[in-house]
Structure formats: structure tokens, C-alpha cells
Length: 162
Image (cartoon, rainbow, N blue to C red; front, side, top):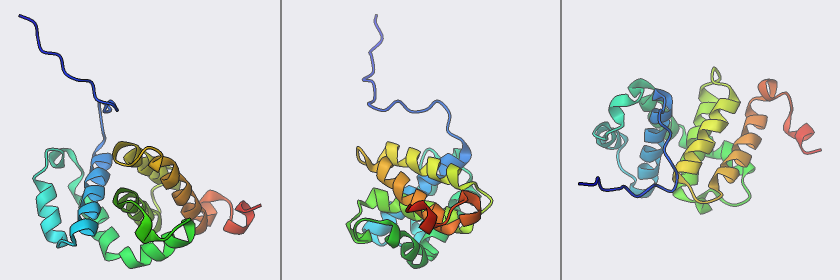
């Protein structure tokens, strides 16, 4: 008897995702849900606790990311908007969620290198976003990192425009 074959996925999943990456995936899902349904954060967290990947995620980091991004959403949006070519409200919910998460990490987690934050956001956009969403997320977060982490990026926004 032959074994049934499975249909290959369009984007093969990596064989291993670290705990922080899983935490970021959950946080993006939570931000997305918050933006779309305006639910209570504690209810969103409780719902995400029941997902299959939650057991493998860094629970403390996930809750920090989700609570922090939502608690500081207005502040983060003021940082993000100048880096956009359109209004924040015109972004897809996935891009918005990834950018809010990336902005939170850039502002509130200076111990994480900005390049790692941008790379993680790009991977999230490749997995969950539109066809070229990862390029857009990359460009926006690169501008944001240049504005927020001048010492780390080695350039100011005025020197980058040249």
C-alpha cells in the first residue's frame, strides 16, 4: 500500500524556529487581532495561549511584546508615520502589525541589535504579508532605525538622504 503524498507548501517552513521568533509570530497575530477586532488584550493573550506554537514560545517575551506594542501604540505610530509613503491607516493589517512590533523593539529593546529586529520583521512579512510586503517593511524599519538608533546605525537621517 502506498503512502498518500502531501501537497508541498508554497513557502517551506524552516525546520527550527527559535523561541523569540515564535514569540514575535504570536505578537504579530495578537496585534493583528487587536487592530481588526479591537478586542481586550487579556482576551487576545488567553486565546493565543491556546495555540499550538505557544508552548514552544518565550512566554515572557511574547507578553512583553504584545502588551508593550499595544500600550505604546500611539507613541510608536508617531515614530512610524514619518517613515511611510502613505497614511498608517492605509497599510495592510499585516504590515501595520509587523511595523508596530518592529518599532516597539527598536524603541524599547535597545539591547537587541537593530539589524536583528529588521531581519525578524522581514521574515515575518515574508511568512504572513503580501508579495513584496517584506521589502516595504525593510525600508520603513531601516528609516526608523536610522532615526531612533543614530549611534548604532552610524548615521543621522540627514546624512542618509544624501
